[in-house]
Every structure is written in structure tokens, then in C-alpha cells.
Image (cartoon, rainbow, N blue to C red):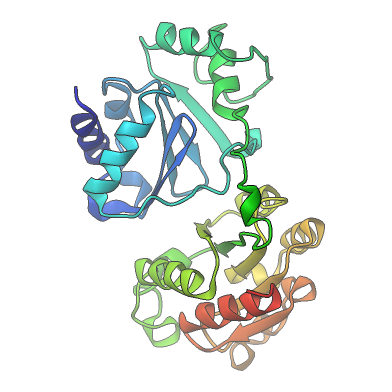
Length: 306
């Protein structure tokens, strides 16, 4: 199969171009963010020529693993098919925690990835979430997670690249459906588009958007941001009023953070008046709809000197 045919097959298995919100390249992985994870057909992905395995990351992330020589061509064709620009992946080379990385190795593909792994520095790692039992799996794990960080251009040191992380908590993915009189009629895709555009306009080189309905997944994402991102915009949703764990995670990483709420929470129910997260934030923006994210991004850019 050609790179174009492989990319087209992958696109079909992840729900088509309409389901793809972002695509990026991370060494041996085609990393895709989808709007509807249930539309992903992982069994069919495993059968595509050249696919060595798949991985999940967070709630909306799917990674398709190829050999290092094959992935670039497939990625280039994939971006053409989706019409989404080639985003720089801020987590390239950053080791993910085993708690939020689950890898499935395609049946019948072990010899191909073992051969590639043998050509690499053979390190052995310990993981809890293997879906098959094979001595070569550890080689693939090393290939997936021990890639070196890309070299920085020394000429750019005078103008450091700033990267932004936007985290949304439970039910934010239901925008446009959930109580539109309170949260507005614009959907989650509109929110993602706004964040990407606002970040670009504010001078950030990258904007990663993450959403989860699970407190632990949000804590993992915040921890993974350490040493990778320079600013954080967070709408913790209902966890705003309950989660000391998210507060502690933000304090731990020490990244400048702004809290955002789509509705005017200070005028709503009594329990919404309490925000644990606010203690770790530069400011809180409420009641501006999804435009509040743009304000937060601009304020972070100013704080960072962009």
C-alpha cells in the first residue's frame, strides 16, 4: 500500500475527517485527537499494512504506531486528508505514565517491530498494561517512549518558544447540548478551534487541548505538563468545587495557570461558590462563554512576556 492508501485507511478507522480534531507526529507514532472516541475501530486499525500497534492517551487520544521510516510519509498524507496543519507535538520524547498509556500490539506484527527495536539502544522498561505477552513487547515499549527529545535551534534561544495546555473537566465535551441557556449553543469543536486560534494569535507555538470526565486523568495530564508547557488554562468543571487533588497537581508543577468558567458561577448555586483550584491560579475568568478562554490565553501570554 502507498502512504496515501495507508493514511486513508487509518482515517476511515478513526471515524473520518469530521471526527479528527488534531493530528501530530511523535517519533514513531501518528498521534490523533478525535471528537468521538467510540467511532474509532481499533480492530481494523490493527489490520492496516505497516501498523505495528495502537495506543490510547487520555479520553480522546489515539496513537497509531509505525516504524520510524514509514511514519513520516503516512503522517504527511494524513494531514492532507484531514486538512489540519502539522502540529508540533509538545510531548514528543516525554515519557508517559503507565497509568494513562495503554498499548495494544497488532497480532502478527511482532517480528517487524522487534527488528526495528534491535537497531535502537536496547533498554528494558517495566509496564503494567501490556495486552499481549511477548519478550519483544519491551523492545517496542522502549522504541515508543525512549525517543530522544528533538534538538532545539540555538538561534531561537533569544526568543523561547512558549507552549500552552488547555484542560477541560467533566461535561465540557457536551457543550451545545448541555443546558444551552447556561453554557451557550456553541459546541466543543468551536471551543477547540477558538483555543487554537487564540493561542496562535497570542504568540504560543503550540496549544494542546485535553478533556476528561475523570479526575485522575486530569491529574495525570497536569503532571505530564511539567517541563513541557509554559502556561495552563483550566476549566475543571464540577471538580472545581471538590478536587484538592487537582489543586495539588497544579501547585506541584508550578506552571502559570488561569481558571476559566463558561457560566457566571458566582451567581449560581451555593456549592459553586467554592473553588479549590483558584488557590493555585493567577486569576479566574467567569461568565464570558467560550470567549473567556481567549481572554485567559491573552492574559497568560502577557504574563509570559509574549
